[in-house]
Length: 580
Image 1 (cartoon, helix red, strand yellow):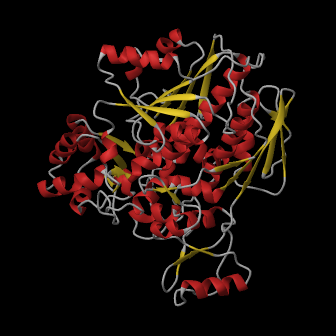
Image 2 (tube, one colour):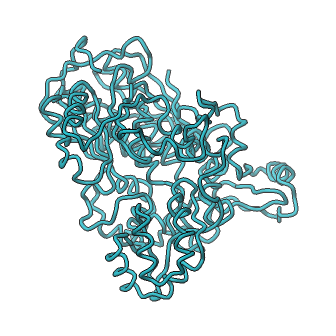
Image 3 (cartoon, helix red, strand yellow):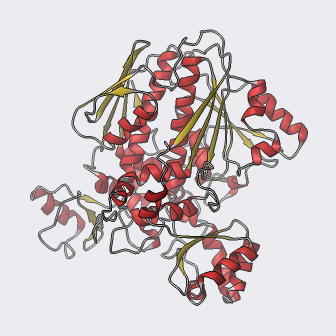
């Protein structure tokens, strides 16, 4: 809850960082350009220099510095992916560890660095003493795989088989497409319309349903055969009649042609009378801030989780009987390990949003909160009378945050889920090198990055409110996350260049008993397939190559000193920032 103890800083800022100057120094770091670019979008000014140390300063602030690095083991993007399990999770669909051709850990690191700077400024504005923050790509990578890591350390086995396989599908006329439905009845009706075998339809639902959790979907091959025997128009008609959604994989060139240049979030201030708040006795940047979260699945819950790690009190709004995902296997002490990775430490209140009385109770709770966050389906909040204008009437200083799929930027877009947004925006092409067919990663790349950009947007909204006294609506989306992730590849496509990385790019090398990864632009002058991993690493490092072993079993990360266990015994990755 907010406190009227300290007046807000009087300012007429139109953007959160208006009047602030950014300065960069030090050696190159992960995602230098992303950090500076996002800070400029938020109103900061500064020169074009880049570096791993970024400082924001202004007349109203003593200054905050964020330092980024690769970490203790990694030296660049592929070695960070190898060391944190990203290669292992992304490679599950194919059966071997695979490197993402996009700079995923660097992108996550950059967004976390912007978060750290915004949180530090907000802490200073509220009387706190934060002046320095550190983010490493290794911690960023652990955060990105935290759900998979939690499942690997649970006392039960996975919810579905972890084995190679999964979408996308291909039609008889060569259209490669993604398919999405949350309804088993719609799933069955779609495949029946394509004359798929009944046993395959039945056996395919569970791996398809849990592909978000396992990063693979080993369903029967006959389902792929069924789409390969059907023309695209027949597949579209089967989708329309059954209620499932299908989306052809789009290229980066197509995305570049329609790209509107919009930032990954939108902040809309509104008149308010916000009296400000102190940070309280704790040093955490968001101490004393209350967040109401009505989130489903990954995107919004992760946004709230990050705000909680920064010190906010997060109150999770759950349906009567509690969030059904609490029981999703594998469990630790009877609670889903994967659910805990996103929701540990949150308070929970059961609210039936279908009940007028409970909706009124939720409005009363929002009237006392700083942030209301949700990722309901488009139009749902307005239908319930819980949209921005409804809640701002009782709480004009509210930061109202909506983390969506498409942010209303693409008319006619399909269901806004991770894999459908990947398919629609060219991520499937950007994530794989030229000798691999384009395919969305079954690691939830955009749900995670969407949660991160959502937290970035909320922090920007809180800072703008603190500086101006105005409440803010902040909108972020999976589309915005996709555009951030594919920025470099999309720019190459827009210039008419080949946006895809060359064959074999970031593919780890097999050894006699495992895998190793080398930095970009490194080449091995000899065959290491007959050498044990330890011996191969010793030889390569002796030749001056910074090779690292590829983590293939996430359970192996649990013995590292950075992974702890929560009260339920579930693995917990460290907070991605260190503040001082």
